[in-house]
Image (cartoon, rainbow over all chains, first blue to last red; front, side, top):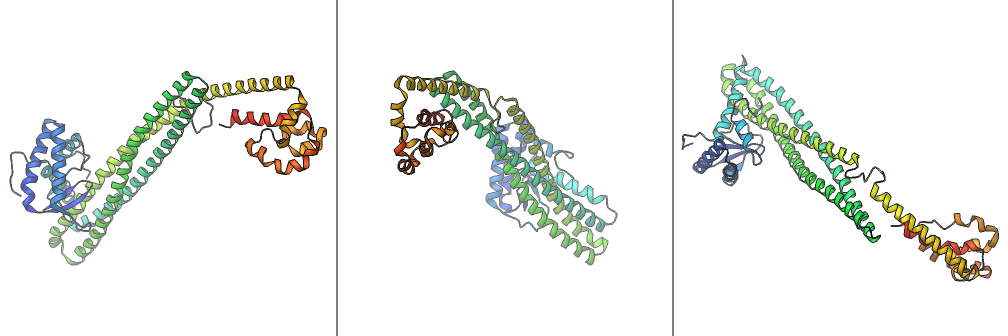
Length: 92
Length: 319
């Protein structure tokens, strides 16, 4: 599956990593809901590390949409919250 | 994908938002092939915007760099002043200089952090603009193929795919630009504040050439000690008697003047006494002067003036 890290590009990640990613992603979402900064940072850092470790960067001339999209490393909890709303951060 | 928990997860939700935006844009078009041209136009606009963004961040970064240099100069200068003040026994003045130095240093540290951030933004945007360029090129190729090869109905799925891929990239890049713009705006506000601070004299102006109060006090002290020294020297001359002094100091002093003796006395002060490197003037001259000038060594009073005054100029201004 293809995963995008915002500001970094797309990665092709082995499907076997999906379980780990989902677990961390759930933790990330819970942290955002609860406003738990420490948990948020830990989950996001862990997610990005997993994607980078299990994925290989997609060549830039590939025009495929990503199945999953992750905020970049320096994204704040507030920014993530806004990203989750339709008229939030993402332009278009 | 497996493991659909009660919570959907951030990754999935963000990607859904991206997809929803892409679909909304696609739905607006009657003939899907129109979408291709319209999207391509927007891609080119975005590319221009990203490149401008890179240039803006670079400009902002250079401004910060300039200010950092100014603050560094200022900090060095204040430390010099503190050292000078201490050597003159003015601990109070040294303390004031060091207090300002610490304030300048604090500003400098903050700027350094922000400089690093701007640099990171610049790098990210540069990479993003290259990636977008590649994707836009790929899109253009795909667009032409789709338009040439497929009917409107057939083209739909292919267009959707290419469009979603590129619109995701555009969303990503668009956010990166927004971030960079925010950072640049913050940075400019901060840079403006520091400019004002410098202009107000709170950090003092190192590069504007304005004389600050610490410097003028140091200068005043240096000047008054010059006066004292001159006084002491003149007194010394009076009590020791002119001729004896002359014998001691003449060999290195001023050959030309000595050769001409009394006739040049009045013009001597303008020849050597304030030359910036008095020591070299003193030690370079003897070889030529000694042969020429020795016969007429006992010159007029001002000759003995020269070495002494040159020394003092060195003490008072040279540092």
